[in-house]
Amino acid sequence: MRAVRSLPLLRSAATIGAIALLLTACGGGGDTPSAETPSADMPAAEPTTTVAGGLDGQALYGRCAACHQANGAGLAGAFPPLSESEWVTGDPTIPIKVVLHGLQGEITVAGSTYNSVMLPYGGTGDMNDAEVAAVLTYVRSSFGNSAPAVTADEVAAVRAANSGRTTPWTAEELRSLM
Image 1 (tube, rainbow, N blue to C red):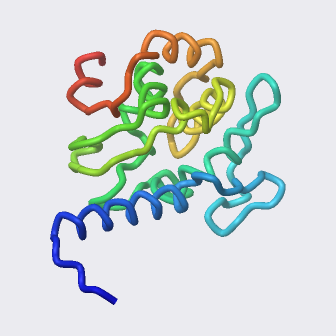
Image 2: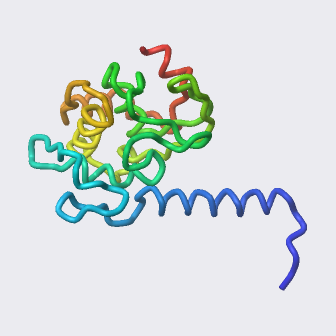
Image 3: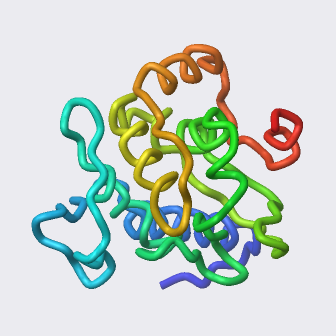
């Protein structure tokens, strides 16, 4: 086997590996747990949130829990909490944009700064409008949050208004919309 001599190549391979790991860990291509069969990451005691069409936001949250944790507390220094977060409970277009197109760079949540990447889920065809609405409705009404539900129509409007976007949002861009 030949030794790799180029540091940029190592960085590229590491980046590809990290992206593959995140896709696997955060639900890309995998099954999501159902509410009927809770996993260790998805406690059964939390209520199931369903939206029109019967979609289960709690089950869909399974793809988010690997990073944001089953309790919405996030991972210190890596992934911000969703519990009692102004980014989640304020204007619903903000979390819709994040799920559709992702988020990159520094963001401050509950006084702590995070600098990571959230992959897009809704904009890549992984989640349709009703699924994005269901998972956001669950997040906005769980973990100590009490924000109104998100509708598939709201998601469709945000998707249409930002259809040309090809890059993740930054906190600075989103803060200007708050």
